[in-house]
Image 1 (cartoon, rainbow, N blue to C red):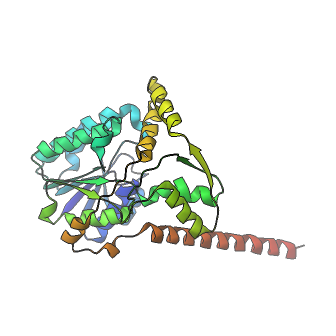
Image 2 (image 1 turned 90 degrees about the vertical axis):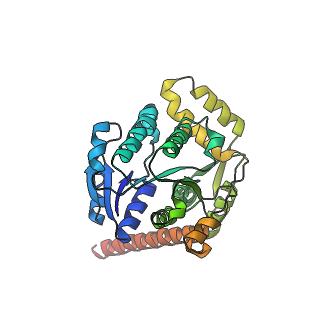
Image 3 (image 1 turned 90 degrees about the horizontal axis):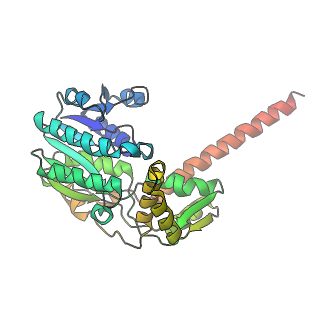
Length: 321
């Protein structure tokens, strides 16, 4: 099977590229910038030029492709072009997949997206989901919540650096998951018929609030956090105000995502059925505790090595006098 991966340089996409290659798939990555994607080529993927904003570049990239895994999404600095990138271009990609007789199309959306349809990016993902369901191509839609990797700059690094950790007064409980586990499940699902034309959740072993994540980081790192709480009413007012000006649309959308994770809504959704079909055990999915323990272990080891090098250099300098 030959895979075309769209968005292969992203947090999730690179894990899917790595896992696909490890499992022996032929992997092509649709990229706009060959230099930025050079690490994918070093791993063994074939880089093909394609730009979702330039429809004429898409059909050629599909030659010899069996399945498409679409990990791409609009970056915050691309939000002015949100309709072009995440709707028109995706429609063209789906139509091209139909014409090229692609066997399978995998798309990643957001968990409980219907509840947040007022957010532009989520509304467009819903439209893409609907287009896939009415198309003639076999599809699988995986609904995601949050990634372990996103918790590092949000919580772990500020705690290590003794910077403020920003949270809201209200916090939902989110089933975060490692992108490596998402990649594993995605690749395994390609050859299993039970995943065809389904919309399924991919979530972690348990749900976490901001306070629980901070407490876990403090426990593992041995450092205390500096928490700054933003009142939810201030967040809503700022989001409402920034909608009036085009130059603040990016800010408004980011705030809307923050509000989405701040609603007192518990995302208790299990993927036991998925694991059963794939003959996987809950122990095959990494826990947040293990992930953060490994992260802090690596960081502490690097800090010790750095301190040793500094002390060694100082000792050498003193001996030269």
